[in-house]
Amino acid sequence: MASEAEKTFQRFAVFGESSSSGTEMNNKNFSKLCKDCGIMDGKMVTSTDVDIVFSKVKAKNARTVTFQQFQEAMKELGQKRFKGKSPDEALENIYKLMEGKDPATTGVTVSDSLHSLNPTSLNPHCSCLPSYMPGFLSTVA
Image 1: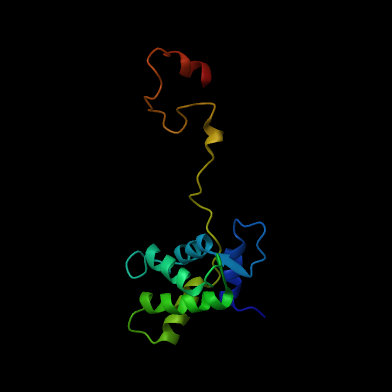
Image 2: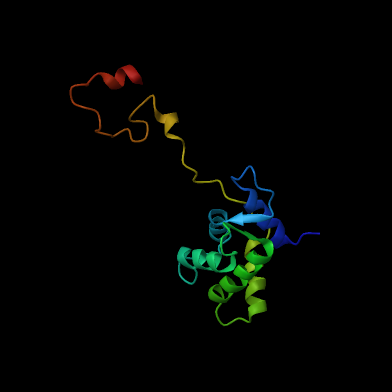
């Protein structure tokens, strides 16, 4: 049976990747996992740290990591995130942060095509319309 960490790995591995089986994770989803689970805090662990660790654990010409490589990465990030703790304790704390987490979809950008009917729908105070089109807004709205 898969551990909680492995289940979280799989949920993030398939996020936005319709062809993914959940056994390997790309850098984008690895970074998302680190951010959404609070592993990346911007102080002890930055996005640069996450990218470096990902590159370090993946196979030389690969674009993805396996769960085993992911565990190596989490050990390394755990040491940075929880300085002063033993490697096992730090890894345990990392896995606690991941427990039961799903990829967040809040804050996802709305497609610009939804705003194409009204050029000021993004900002009603927009002064982007040329002055020679004063009646334009009343015809669009």
